[in-house]
Image (cartoon, rainbow, N blue to C red; front, side, top):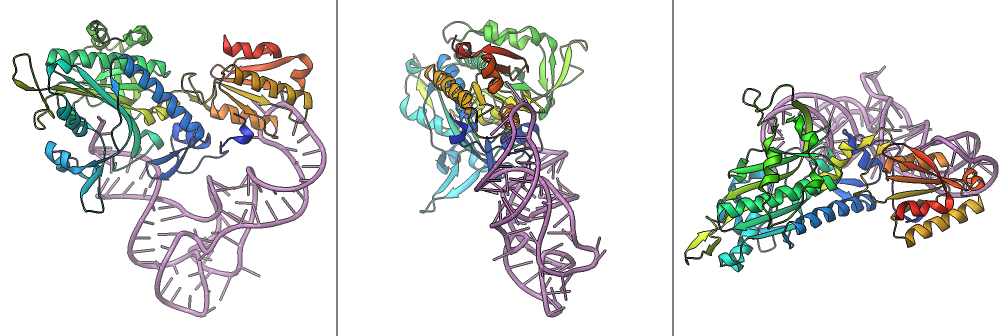
Length: 437
RNA sequence: CGGGAAGUAGCGCAGUCUGGUAGCGCAUCACACUGGGGGUGUGGGGGUCGCAGGUUCAAAUCCUGUCUUCCCGACCA
C-alpha cells in the first residue's frame, strides 16, 4: 500500500479524552475514532489489526474442533424471557422496539439464541459433542465505558458454546477450549495466564479467566513464578487426544485475580508469588444444564430417555485484545506490533523523494515486495525524513526499511527492527529476500 | 448510580474571575527553500465559543436549564 494513497490519519498530539497508553496510541496511530462513549469506528489500519486477531482466533477454534456460524446482533426478547435473564440483565442490556412494538434487544451475549438453535435441530446424543461459535459484535450498555476499546459498549467477541451428553464429555470440550486459548494468545504475541475465576451470574462449577499481563491492567493479579517455564506454543491442539495432562499442568500452579486471591489460603510460597496487573481477554465456563434445563435443550441418550445437555461457553474479547496487545507492547514512540497481528509487516520509507534514482529504487523494492507477498506499507509521501521515521515508529510495524540518497550511494538500505531498535545495513538487492525466506 | 472535571477551528490550548469586533501552537492550502529522526520562511482558508432560555445597550465571559465527554469509586463472561 502506498501511504500517499492510503487513509491513515495520524495525530501528533493526543486527544484530551484518551488517558491510557493503548487508547492514546490507537487514536494517534489512526486506528480508531470515537463515535460515542464506548463506540468506535475502526479505521483501515485498525481494521486490519482486528481482522488479523480475528483470523488467529478463528484458526485455533477450528483446530480445536469448533464450528463457525454467525448469529445476528439483534435478538428477540422472547428467548430471554424464557431463560429468565430478560429481567435479570438490567440496564446493561440495550432494549429496543421494532415498528410493530415488538420487544427486541441488541445482543450482549448469545447463550439463549444458540440454545434455541441447538434444541430445534439436535435430538440425538449421536450428534454430540458439538461446539458452535461465532465472531460477532456485542453491545453492553456499561455504566462507565472507558479505556478506549478495552471497555467499550460495542465490542467484537468470539463466543463458542459446547454441548455434551454428560459431564465427563463436557470437561473434554472445556479442556479443548482451554488449550486453544493458550495457543491463541501465544500466537497473538501476548502472555496470558489462566486464572480460576468466579463463575458469577453465568453460574456453574468450572471457570477460568485468561489474563494478559500488562502494567496498566485493570485488575491486580497474583501468580506463581513457575509460569515462566511454561511454553504455550508447545501445547498441541486436538479434540480426540486427552488434553487433561496439559490442563492439569497449567492449573497446577497458583494464579488468581484480586477478588479470588486470599493470601492466607493461597497455595504458593511468598517467594514464588508474583504480583502484577492484567487485562482479562478470555473467559471460559462450564455451566452444565443452567440454560438447557429451563429451555429444554435435550437429546435422547442411548436408552432413549431425554436428558438436558451439558453446556459450556467460551469468550474471547477480540476488539479488547487490540488494546491489550498495545498495553503489553509499546514504548514512548508508539506501538510495537507482534508480527502476527501487525497491520503491515514492513514499512518502506523513501527518505529523499526528490532524488529520482532513490524514488525509482524504492518503487522497485515496493513492487518486488508486493509480488513476493510481503505486506508492505510504502511511505512515498513528499514529507521530510524525520516525519516518516516518527510516523513509522508510531504505527509500530515490525520492520522498517529506509532508503535515501546516502543509501543509494552505498548500495544499501537501513533495516530497523521496531521491537529491539536494532539497525543494520543490507544490500539493496538483498532486502526483499530478508522478508521472503 | 455517588463524587470530581471539561466542552472555544481537524487536534492541543489561552481568553471567562473583571461583559465591549474570537486568539495562539500544530495540522491544512499556495509558493519558495529543505530533505537521514515530526525542518525553514512568506502568504491564505477555517470557529453563530456544545445546545436552549434569561439578564444587559452589548454575552465565549454573568444566571438557569439541558446534552455530551473524561476521571475516581461502585459495577463488570
